[in-house]
Length: 568
Image 1 (tube, rainbow, N blue to C red):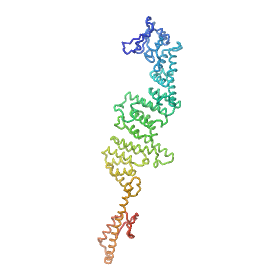
Image 2: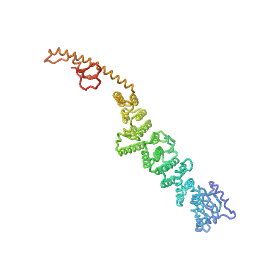
Image 3: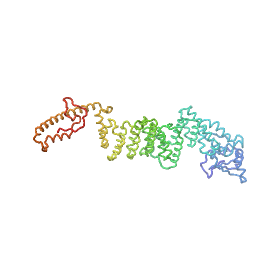
Image 4: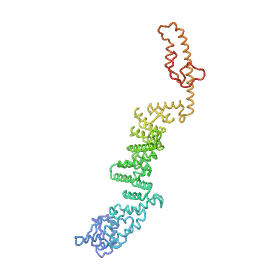
């Protein structure tokens, strides 16, 4: 009968009932088998009948009557040894998918083979494995899970390989022809496995020709389950108590993440971009290796045209949503995408600076909106803000309204910037590419530096006068402005007529005094000084300065030749 060592109260109920299946109470037990903390009082002859290992121990023992055997290193521990002992005594017990692998390893350890005794425990467990446990995907996965504590013996006995082969084959079938709902139920089954066994199944599925999307589906489900608190939180506002220190849990999570990234199939577009962004944020948080982060950055940059503002925000903020991560990853991702677009443009024989693809324009709009979101954080420096804004080519922005909005938010969140710093922030924007509404707003924006306001006002007036701003200016405003210009021209022409009369009057006076002032230095008269002064003022903006050929009627509105006007 099994008895505890040192009155250990943790002995399982099953081991306490050992005496119930020792069939003969008349024959005293003659050996005590130690397995861990449990002792089993048994009969040698019953054990020797099935176990060649115990027979060798007794025969080769130097003691005349071996009374104690230590089997603490038996696979499965006391619970599995109890079942093996029951088998030796001929007592029925249940073999399940949870214990069959351990029983098979224990039978091998105890040398309970058919070579020693017919229909022994080894063959019984092998039959159960092939006929029951490995007949379904779920059974194979459960058996494989139980092998985690049975290494390396489970691998030596090919149990692991058999489970991997069955699981991968059935997973491929389920991916193509689902037998139950939801169709991806099989991916949930794989999440209970250790990453090393999961890797074996994914590798086997690849060798069987599984599609990249099938592999991606399994990896996504596994990552979200195994790194639940890190990957599944897509909001960027996670639990504040998450510790980024080098604890054992964090080290395990980092190793798990790096293993998952190593499993990603080569097809870059197999994964949704929000999942890749969550993986990259997890890699930054767990301080994963540079190679791990670079692989994720490359994958994101390839499909950056599908990115949303929320995806970029996931990369940028810590899990509590209160502080910015290092934005270098975002910079490298955008830079990689721009470089790819340049290479495509060069290959197609186009000019990247003048014509940008639709994908590049979409990314530019997303980046500008992203800048508007992060601009409110006071720890965002001007260099980082401008660095991200300048990554987008100028030609990718048809209008700079979104970028202007981001700049305005940044200036509002950083009110202590001086004029030079505000000009530096605004240097990434082209004021001439603002829409009419944005120019009106900018002209009244006290946060903008004076130079930007003047640019907006000047360009707006230029547009109105030339009549080229058909899309943004109001038709009524343009008509009123033109009427005002015509009225000003008429006023200028009236003034010019009055000056012409004054010129003729001065000329008459000079003719009358011409004979008396010959040979002597002319003293400047009041009218001559007046005429010279008026000649310098040049008040005529639209009318002609040559009054010698004036006609009555409508004034000439054509642009005059530029020459100095003088009535002297």
